[in-house]
Image 1 (cartoon, rainbow, N blue to C red):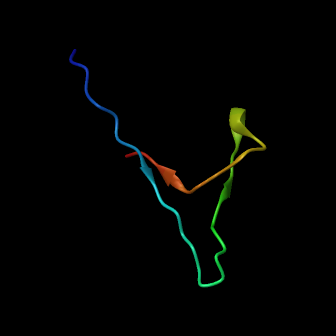
Image 2: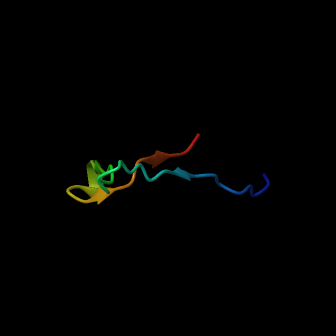
Image 3: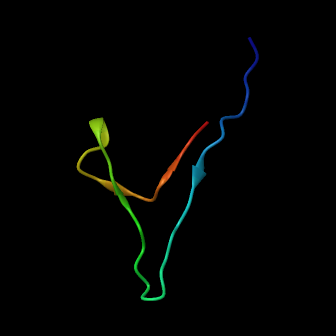
Length: 40
């Protein structure tokens, strides 16, 4: 088995009023917030 790099994606969404979209985490990371993202 070979080691392969892991890919992750994160985005920052901002509107004209400088409001940034964040997500409330679930599971072991609750109740923290983070930027939206994920991995394939």
